[in-house]
Figure: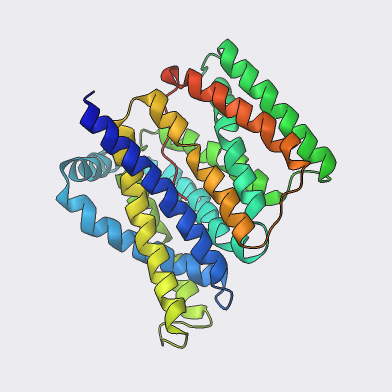
Length: 298
């Protein structure tokens, strides 16, 4: 891989993580909007953004053609597709809901745990081997989770939805060969009726009965969501898996920063939670040359 491609890959990966963090921050600032209404606009506008990008890039057209061809010859694939759309719909809604309800830190913690739960899912569903470093990562993460569970009276439900829900989503996509951006666009298409319903039934609807800053924020969330997913995919194509894996941990760090900006706090005891988790992520990053990464919509 050329130095130029690696530099572009690092740049777009960090940019994608930053865009997801910006989306998180904007959602937390729209206090007079409901999370369902923001979710609706995100689905509509992200789908629109992808519709303006995918037809004009060769790999995007190829992904859509392959997907449609497989479904045409095997219509039963629609069922797991609907299941995957439902799961990712919940995750996209949660990403809008949490920063509005003082649960941003819980969601960020879920994203810290996600690489670890994905390792476990790979072991059970795809018979992936756990190398010594992966075993150390799981053990270190278990210490952090144990401290959080004891000190916080258990793991918050948004944390569990993220770190347990996404592995199910990834297993479905990998099992049926739909691990690409074209499939994500189809999932958004399946969610489109729900998104339109939430927009029409929301407090602002399409009448424009909202402050201009609110509309700018809602539109920005949708457009940035589409751009971030495209950049994330490009990074996965341009970077070695080891470096791509390490850079994927930038996002949860940024989400913690956004959580603090939104008014949530981290005490010193958090070191006993996040310290082992960060150590586990370092172990996974070193070992990630052997671990194929999965693409994740937010």
